[in-house]
Image (cartoon, rainbow, N blue to C red; front, side, top):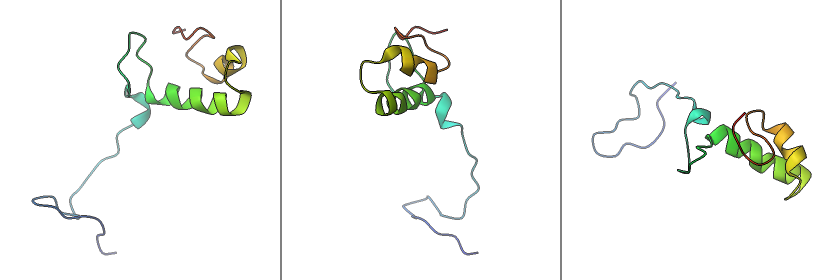
Length: 71
């Protein structure tokens, strides 16, 4: 299989790489420090249950309560 992808400057498309868990990083800086995984669960919960149904949404986010505090 031949390499695919961009080659810009010294970056070559055939270098080795490793996956990093993107769900554990913090996207937005805040005092509550939500991870990317929690924010995705929040958005999915809002989509499923509707904006404002925090009790139901918090059940989808296993690490947060309905008021957004860390469990």
